[in-house]
Amino acid sequence: MITIHCDNCERELQLEDKDAGSKVACPHCGDINRVPAPSSEDSAVRADRASAAGLPPDGGAETTVRTLRPCMVRARPLSFTGVALVMIAGLVGVVMGLTGENQTWLAILGGLIALLGFGVLFVWWLKTMSASLEVTNKRTILKRGILARSTSEVVHDNIRNIQIDQTFWQRVWGVGSIGISSSGQDGIEIQLGDLKNPNDIRKTIDLYRPL
Image 1 (cartoon, rainbow, N blue to C red):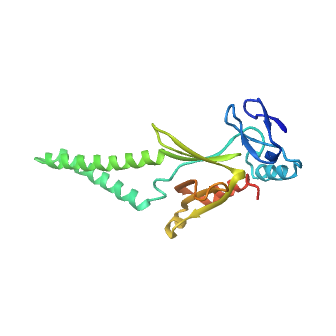
Image 2: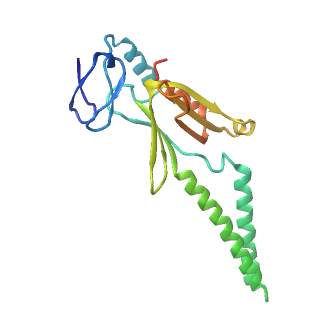
Image 3: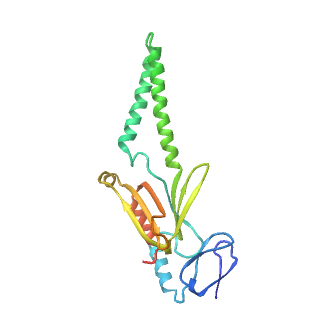
């Protein structure tokens, strides 16, 4: 048996020998803890990799490394420009309708067009804010929802594959989607699109993986 203390709540955890060198969740607080391996050489190397990059070390208490959300303008610049032009046209119509004679209809139409553009941007913004990817020094967590919330997470030690997808234009604008799968599942468990510099995200996660 292996005895450790949780990094977060400091309670004593009794673990099987087979858990040595892996990461386990504390049954009391849910924090992810690293179980010491018979030789600490691998753990030290990984900690040095993260620390050398100016990031939190692999061991110790769980710390958020990066929190990311989908991009709005950068992911869809043409769509954003189109909606912005619609709003500007609507506002111009309102001004012309209010300043001209017998142009009330133009002010009303312009107002409706401007409100439509604002509504599209607001819904787009809500969709962007409802999803986030949190990378800690122990796991990657996908969160979705604003009022209701669903989460999916993969412990870095268990990551089998990180998939990056980018079209030509996404490469030009520096955005793309990332998919993460673990060794215990056949499919992709975490997937989020329209992220800025997805290859940099993968490099950050790789610093905490047993490569």
